[in-house]
Image (cartoon, rainbow, N blue to C red; front, top):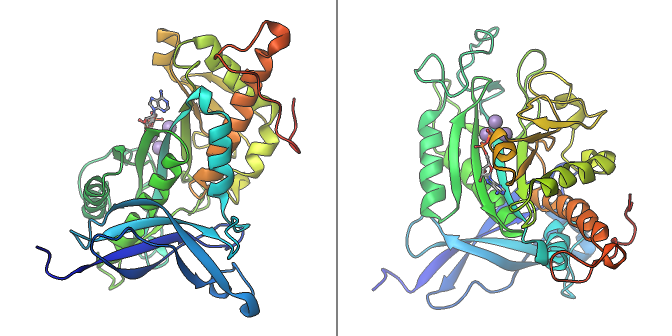
Length: 368
Ligand code: ADP
Ligand code: MN
Ligand code: MN
Ligand code: MN
């Protein structure tokens, strides 16, 4: 018997901020036994509407247990809709689920490596008040209070994600001190995006509760290049595989070749300020040119050595920024890679490979 007959549902949605959207949330008290219903918010305060027609609709799409408030409370990822029921222009999930349905026969999986940086006020957590810490080299996967900063927050975040039932596959300390990573997946779309956005919300929310020695509380940022100079940026490497790639190495190579044909389109949608991060240094390839290679961490796309050895598996798109929208990035990859695969094995060349008819290219996009 619960203490009271209600649960708290934290409705989480993505706002209309440009160039990088932000998370918003508010709490609805819902009677026990009821699913979280459709709800609304004031879109004029989130860059999603004008004041005179401010109502936006929250459509629950992904519900998990709330690890912070505990039983019976819930976290609820929502799509933002217009009052007529159609997707709001800021709603990138709608296009992602449409693309996923269209290429469902490829059964595409994604594993996302979310890098982020902890801040204590305006400086990265653990950095000296004046100047810089020792140069990079010893921090990645480091141990010891002089090497890693923020581990209690990282541990609490991992615990919260697991309690919420999110599919986190690992965490690690990153190359720049104060920088960390967690991985989500492998999962299909749009769920991998739902899980990443929920894990991001939990990251911000978990960090809120941790005081720093300077009297602030810890904040997490997805800034792609938090510190200029000889310090690593933060990315969101996007590992993916289609059914074909999981069975055949040639399909892995074909996927990399397909990405090459639409490099500029992808770069333009892989997160704001990507040019600052993809410099050709700090384990990145320049945004100006596409490249791929086995084990190559200075390439746009890396084929893991194990995949080359097994002759099947997945590839890693290393280009997306930490501040990318996973609904946009996964939608684009599916469009480019699955679209090319279907065209290659279309009726002319002897029929589709996956037991379905080849799909025509999506209107308004480049087809080569
Ligand atoms: P890195 O060596 O680049 O740091 P990580 O271990 O951080 O790699 O991340 C690898 C990611 O690849 C994980 O998120 C994992 O879920 C994902 N992954 C593994 N196999 C597949 C697959 N077949 N399809 C898609 N993603 C996969
Ligand atoms: Mn990683
Ligand atoms: Mn990393
Ligand atoms: Mn990686």
